[in-house]
Image: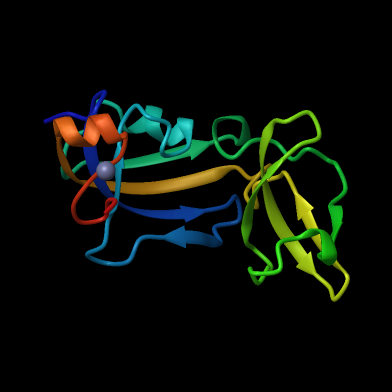
Length: 160
Ligand code: ZN
């Protein structure tokens, strides 16, 4: 079947940047699995996969605006270590869910950890990067009722 709204899709992928450097790739035999139409992958790739079938190869060049966003240009914020929960070890590359002063949920990426401060940025590590996806669609099926009510895929590659 073709990929459409509420399809469960498995695909192999290699992600490179403009210079051909490999940023990420799926392991052989371990495709990425997602629920189509639910913003689980970047919008530019989701759009490129719509209507494709198992066995098809999709090469998609996704601009930052359809990928992980543009860079904000803001300097990193420095949070005193003492202001952070003491029961978690904060490491570079970690993602933190935080609340802005006006109560909005924000996602922050840890860019640096010193003895006194944790440096964080709202920019995704791939913000501002043009994404080159080389994808092969492995499997397409309808989502089950349970999957739709949970909003995610069950089984291999999925939740639970
Ligand atoms: Zn579930």
